[in-house]
Length: 633
Image 1 (cartoon, rainbow, N blue to C red):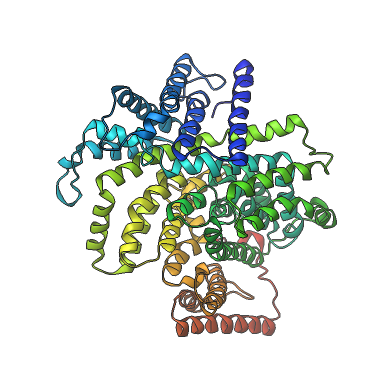
Image 2 (cartoon, rainbow, N blue to C red; image 1 turned 120 degrees about the vertical axis):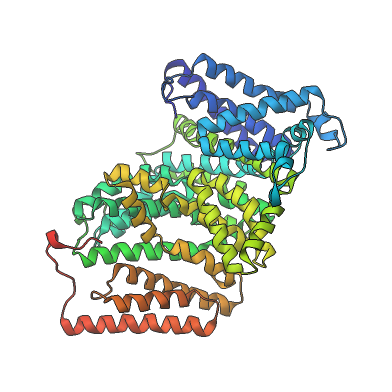
């Protein structure tokens, strides 16, 4: 992303603020009709794709070229045409009214520019996927076999993409135009008001002095930041530049330090209440209240971080690492006195859970963040700081908006051609009626999509193709959506294209693939829990109180068992047979069968008591291996 200078910076600073103010206005006083709101949103954001993101690696990094400015101007034309002709467009009868030449050429211009913007902003993979699905609409009838499509004219394709809310201006772009941009602005206010910095101080004060303190700081701070930022890679660079050097300083190997930050940052997108942009899209696709997504996602996210936190703690105890000294960290008393900084987040969560709309909740959070800043002399927000907060949040909408608009091409193609139903038939045929086999196939598809696409694009595409297949096999829609959502996210820590792990390795100075494999190990629960909640509604807190209670107990036991087994240490080192038994017990804890679940919980409890008793007999509290001979596997 370019860092503009001079008059270009001044102009686009004001332009981006204007975009933010427009969306704040519609959030407070009401959005326009869906198609018009999305059209205005994309029209305002579109030029930023060409002016903020260079075309090639040799393009200027401090200013747009004349070609960029020309493309930015052209990108305004389809939206201006759509706004001026909105009444005519809204009165058209889809697939009945003739597509006027003006609309056809505007659709062609919009699609072409969107593909180029996608290449610049999001990357080549999503552009190629959008091109493939766009081409399938026209040439799909030539594809042999089960995936053969129907023939559609260019007019029909142009109408779908430009003149309806089922193509480029479909639900994904609608989420970007409403929920996402407001929460990005909220994130900007958290940063400028000092609340974001307070998250880090909070993590430092209460986790920094414990064994492996810096790793725990990374887990807690990245969890808090990641839910708001919605980008694992951005979160790695945002918090990892501080936490990774500290982890290395106290003795963690570089690949382990990078993996901890990558796993913690990636998990932010599954942690309520915000969950990046995915939860808003999920709620819109399912047609259910946002708070339902938040409640369902809470327990799996907690289990994910419990396992990660436990593993970094056990690693520190096993190899004799200590935390930071109290003198290096913020005072706990001062941090406790600053708990009022959490009021905006607390109010946001309360409003979401009591039925307020996400936009209203975010606006209240923005106002409260500004009010809280007035009590802090160092971070008090005057008019300039308020404008900076709006700018900081709004400028990040470009990536989300372009990704959502490009995903609209894919959604439109699936809707028009029925390729989703063909994919359902293909998966059902290959699975031979075995639901677990279908889950494995959808997992692989979601991971592959996520390796080359941002979370939003990967989730939308995986949901369009995979969710109908899972629903056809009897899985609940919410569980099916969360299933593909999880694997679209954890692709960021899954080699061979583990973007978050590779970003962390660049900070840690470690070998990328080794960091990625370690990240997979630390994030093991994210590969297990999605399968579990497809069979056990209690893990999504959607069952009876008995199911929910057993799911919580079994989930916590299973999370502990996985962490202990993979690290090979609890109170004392564990033998290989004990570790294997614990892994089997951990899997049992996540099954929906009550007897098997209780048996797994019992094995975990007995193993913990035996390990503690063994430590008591040996008199060992730590594994005092000389630092130079410690096993770091």
